[in-house]
Amino acid sequence: MKELLITLAAGLVENPDAVNVTVDEANDEGVVVYHLNVAEEDMGRVIGKQGRIAKAIRTVMRAAANRSHEKIVVEID
Image 1 (cartoon, one colour):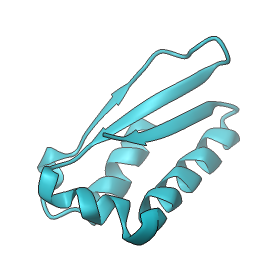
Image 2 (cartoon, rainbow, N blue to C red):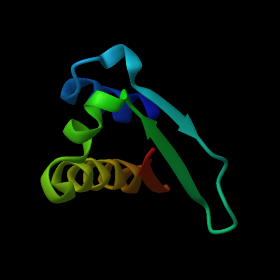
Image 3 (cartoon, rainbow, N blue to C red):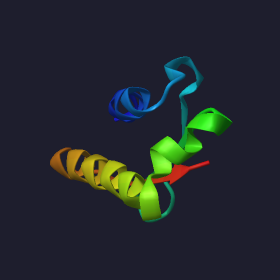
Image 4 (cartoon, rainbow, N blue to C red):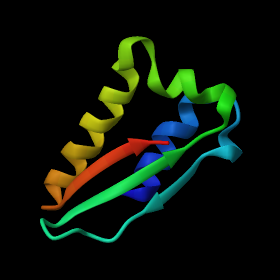
């Protein structure tokens, strides 16, 4: 899952070396939180107009997690 998120984000930004993902432990409900960090100048590319790109990233990640019976949340920091 972490590799999928890195691949998605790296394809969107101008500085793919600055893409970093940290993963939190599962909470009481079994939800794993993925924190996506990109360079400051690439933040707009990852969020998109009215958050459409961010929503699409979250949808793809949620679908991939659903296939492996996981619950995840993607936060863009």
